[in-house]
Image (cartoon, rainbow, N blue to C red; front, side, top):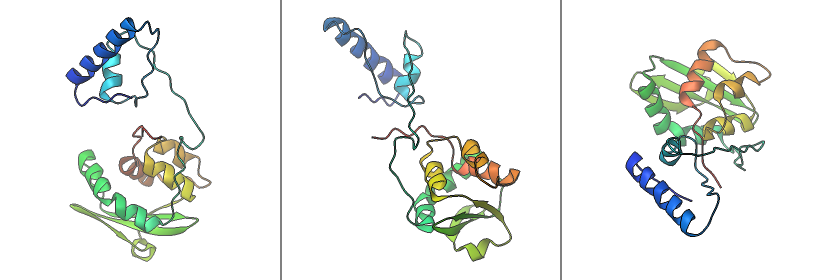
Length: 173
């Protein structure tokens, strides 16, 4: 496994791997890295082959146990994602699952998590806890997860969910 924090370190790392491969008569080096990592990007400038493998749950055995606690734990990241996207949305997004509900109360400069009763006038997304887990991990495109629900959320809820839960290529074992 290899990790680099900049283009220069990724280039140096790949050069070292290739040198080691030549010295040890290795034909192929397999580097398990996310496709958006510095190492993968540096490999694009070389003769490289990218292989993706998929598993039904993204290789994860994660499960949502409490919707409100999950959203509370994600709150700093959700706030940062909304700011980075320049989102002008202000209001509530209620997430209803088979194990419980919670609401994100989104204000211009903050995000709070409340009970479902606080978001009665806002956007609503109903989904199984497995879909929420997939969204939270960023293992699948959010628009695909949400389009597969029995009741597809409206366009504004889809857009907001895409900002809050973007595809992130999680690298998990």
